[in-house]
Length: 371
Image (cartoon, rainbow, N blue to C red):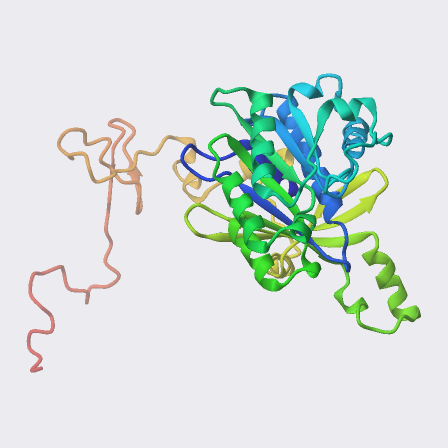
């Protein structure tokens, strides 16, 4: 299912339609949203490098991590950074979001990261932020008809410095831009009101929610019984995705996630209907194929019509040929046959059981009854 999300972002949107948009939601009960974000970012980067994506570039708007983090992330995933300046650009909204350090040199940013990034020193001005994103995207793909993708690692950080309506407005404008192929962002849902979360879900064509593996472990006293469930929630979670199709239908899928040092893993989960159907399946499976021994045994069976004729071929009248055309083929091998060796023909001889039996007549034997 996570691969389905990545393929949807890879394929992009049709001409004249809005770009596919993904909202990744998590909470403090299951804080694995950033791991999912990194997974999608890595998969989309691989598609772009392999030339299998509609987009030819990727703009990462970094609010919660520095550009050096993303450079190291791509290196650990085996992505070539040497040619990354041709397809990726990181807009740094993390190092100096309000322009207080413009006279300082940030030594935390590596040389590789600095060559791939640029500063945004006033995240409160969303109009300028919008212009920077589009400018950096066009710098990767040029002025042709090629498209680029956008990744925002924290919408929650955007709301800290701007209003809800302005944040929703910039996301909607980015999605509707002609040269944007796809866009996805991360949201910490428990930090916001429901109305803001609903607005972002309305703007999205896909909504991925990360939920605790054991819901019952929260809100209870910590004891030996639910301690193991709490430990599972630190490593595992449930991943629910809702897809909105073009025809208005909604499809919901679910997977389990396991977070390890090497990365995140997704495991399919059967729905309740699929589990019930598996339980209803018969335990005995019928084999409709025959073995070689069974075929030989079947060939030895003598069928009923093969008992007649004493080994000679039997001609059976099928009712479609005329008796006058070929009398030999019109003889039916039923009754008592008296073979004629000279002509090869036979005749039917009928013996009455008693003299009281009347010969065949056209008269109705029940004609005298008054019914």
